[in-house]
Image (cartoon, rainbow, N blue to C red):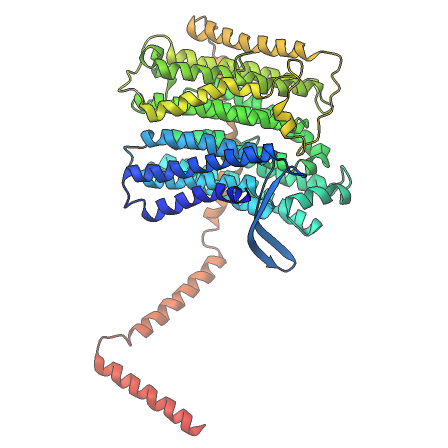
Length: 625
């Protein structure tokens, strides 16, 4: 069965190579078959491998395959080796299965685009890179996948590169995530210097034996890895790239937000959880950053008009919940929310893309309205995704995954009242901005008339994701409701069990409270945006709304503190001596080029004479020797 493990990332990579080299010669149907089919085969192989893994568990809870030795120099070695355990299995399932649905959707969405083959080539490489990232058994191979998803995000965000704004958004994402990647790379150097290896299992085994908990080295290593995670997962203070990443096609947004790019940081922290447990101050920082990010993004989403930007800020907020869970040691709860979030966020982005497509590329929800009558199927599925995002109690998957995080934020030993309050306020904001989006887009008077209805290639993936957004939560019911905890049990060999203090309040109380909070947000959204019972507007209220609309001014701050000083310094340093030195080398090179070019005058007799002189010179030297 190990061969299946190796083939999981290879098929999308083969799809990328075929489409890159021959896609322009193939028909659109052939491109679609290669693009979607390669990911579909990986999804099937993941299911087969997962069944074998769960039915015949190994002693160490993992399946490994070594393909070849990648490099071996100076005492450092790295292999192309893959490993699947419960954590990577969950990620592989989401990446391949959700990715396959997004590819199917893209067949219809991109059918009139001139870059059809190029799009699927990039998407295949994106999926393959993410699979390499989560299956790598060493941090060097993981970093290869890490940089691969960064490259693909740049290519796909700027896919419609003829629009300058799209290129700007792609460069912004690439540069900001490079900041985090630099920190991560320094962390890898530190780990290798300390342990002489970057094999993940060896690192996680040796670290507790060599490093003392709370000492400087694990704190520094965990902090550097956290820097990488913040960039990829768009968490405070490196969150500003993700809203602008909506410049790419809607399937790209769905893939980035649900199955690849932004979840890479969550995976990195979960995979290296031993290091974070050795650095309690950094682990606490993960929880605090997640709590702050989910609030900042929640308020920002409440002020947006662009349908996709609302969902982008929503993703930042929901990743914040995952960071909160990881920071308090609720590892399984964080990964469970990752999986459920993939279902409903892919659904919302694909449904939003369908709405935008049928409204002739209209993104502004204020110009929509009344679409529930015009697009009933899209409305129902979008409503299911919105309900799951809002954690509507009992019937949606989002309730079960988010409820666990809120419960652990209060009851775990690393939890606190403040972290729980941040989570509960974030839950209220989530339901408020989500149903603001629903009521403005689908209710009221019709704004923009749809030009057509989405076809089956778009609706089938959306419908499947809608079903998963409801049923997915029953994989892991709260302990007070069921004795069978399938999801947590599958991760027992990966993560330690979270320690609870309970603090004297039963879990059912928090379940009821979180349900009331979610329903309250929906009710207030109904009053304000459907019943039009808006509060009196004031200049100060407008300024606050504009502040939230601008993402709390982070872009303006970074532009003032970083971008403008760098540009100013580069302008005054434009003619420094270093440039003069290299300019001088260039001038000398051009001078010799002009001299030598005199010999190339096109006159044969000069060439023959030069050859004769050269031969005579060589013979004279040889005779004298």
